[in-house]
Length: 354
Image (cartoon, rainbow, N blue to C red; front, side, top):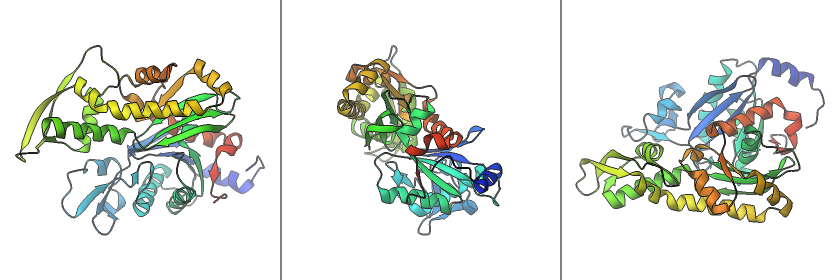
């Protein structure tokens, strides 16, 4: 795709609401060209069991569906159609995409939008084509894919097109994406299927083992946000949680501390740090020299874990920083792609290539 002027594309672009989509395991964010991020909702869909029919005439998606997680009657299921950063349920993902695209496109059905979607580095060619086709069936005119680390690097304004190495770690819901970026490409990268979901799972397992208390995903997420840390706090915290006693089966409360939650999270945090070290060790010496000075940039929801930059810096021996507004870095990067498609075309995959 070069810089050739295409009159039809130009005319369609005048009337379509072109968008970048961070299609995440936990949340989907949509960035519209010229307007910034205008949608941030959970990647959850409520369906009727056995039929995959989305409730409320296709409207039980995002915030409405997440409120139902763990609370649905027998014939209704609130599901996450993406697992570990890839599509686990194609039909439901397509319906979720259609809901988000239609919502953002504001009913302008007569002209379809161009869409840039971020994907994990490690997905297969088959999975990439599945994302493209799902978006096309959901109403996109043209679909481009960009790897999440590159989108994040652009979103936080790293010098990704320069002959200079940058190390980025995107700790999402289903995957942690790690990459050394330079000259518009990923020099070394790894997609690790340990991320926010595994942090939640570690908390659930800890409470079950040490407090005989069963809790759900949303409770684990609240505990992570309130007490979670990867490095000792200046002032340790505690809170009371409610759940189901695994022995009696009755509702019960338990008091927990930030110290024990940090211990519960220590193994997945260690694995993320070790995977980052492995990527850094594979980088060419000149780029390693750049990264020694610039350090590692952390983005994604997992970057909000208190002290994660301290744990990373301690493990790697280089500076680490959490980017401003880390949750939206990838979505902002997809939006920047839309603004400069010709400049960034060499790191895109489009439907022309599949």
